[in-house]
Image 1 (cartoon, rainbow, N blue to C red):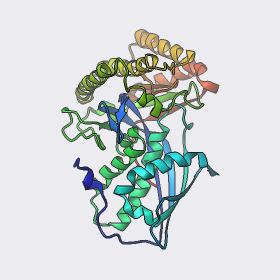
Image 2: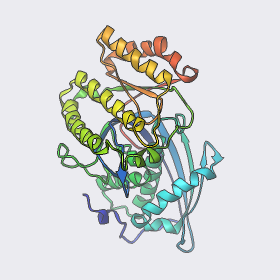
Image 3: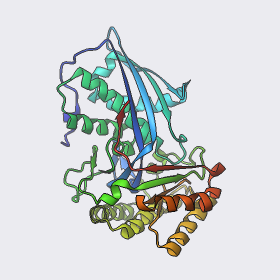
Image 4: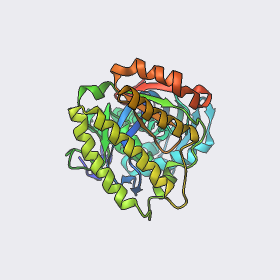
Length: 360
């Protein structure tokens, strides 16, 4: 299903006076990076990610039926129990984008309570988990209004809506491995929603991700601004071609279980993303000295031990270490003994691949 019109709610709703939806959605870590987009949230290249498990946003939405449909959305939002008016513009933008697909929402006021299990805006994809959880809550209400909706349609539309809030949120609805963006290697793929990558090698279904928190503060550049820098970038077309090629290669790797090739491709993707930021106008250096210390240490550790540990980076200074579950204890000992000193206050998060959104 790839027709925009198919996601427009057309049925007569079974109205509820009030409803409370409570969902959690995970962050995800891109293996092949999405960087560059066109309206409305359409990727310039396909991407693939691991869905995480513990790094999640928990969101509860209280829907209250209004006597008459509203001309604009009525909502309030709190984060960690504190009102956050500064979050409202992004939520407002999201609601405006999805308005045509969820017309019933104009009949409700929303009170949104949200919290993260990880630092906000620090290079972990908080927008992906936040928009994934909010989309899941909205679709929970839709299912109550239209009980005959199929689960597969609900999943697809949840990803579709989440994408309109944050592109990478399209990949946070399912797990453990999700692709987003059209590519011949995955015939079911779409630019409009994420799809689960099926028939992957068992080694990847139990992969671990340790997030090394080099900097827990606000990112130097927002993802939205970063994507916009790809417009007119002198290397943009070459980057998009590279990412499409890497997508196809990675799909093969995920099926055959070649971890050594996985490591090489994932690290090349991470460095390519940062190379685009280094050569943009204006330029941004998102890595910090300790980011580079960690990368060098990982390379030395892999050369010395032969253990297949990969690093990857989102658009920030933090480092994700990806490794098979069967060397979990060894790698986590390496992190504690050798890498934690490069983290802010010695902070890191051990996570693993997960299965997507959860109803709470």
